[in-house]
Image 1 (cartoon, rainbow, N blue to C red):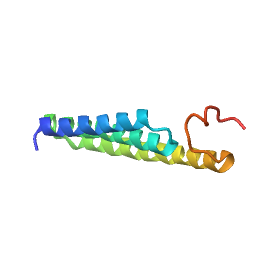
Image 2 (image 1 turned 180 degrees about the horizontal axis):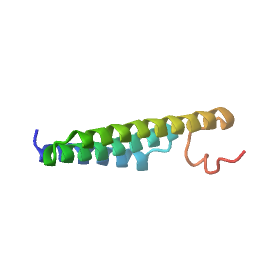
Image 3 (image 1 turned 90 degrees about the vertical axis):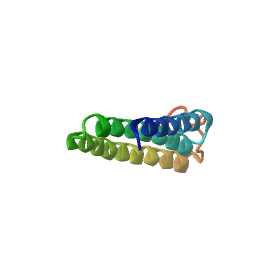
Length: 100
């Protein structure tokens, strides 16, 4: 694959994620849209490093970013599950405040 093809795929991932994050009201679906957006950015960054400077340090940095993103999404899902258990809702407009 060429750099242009990889960047087109990354842009498509980002666009689908943006649409999913903006059009959904369920917290889990919004988080899945954000995950797709982050994956598009990571794919674009990895493609740039691979085609412009094929040095393994760029891929190691991307693996660290993926690990941090995994922890962040796990914490987000924990908040969504806690919200669902305590308030009985999973909609974003009903979860405006996280106090109580």
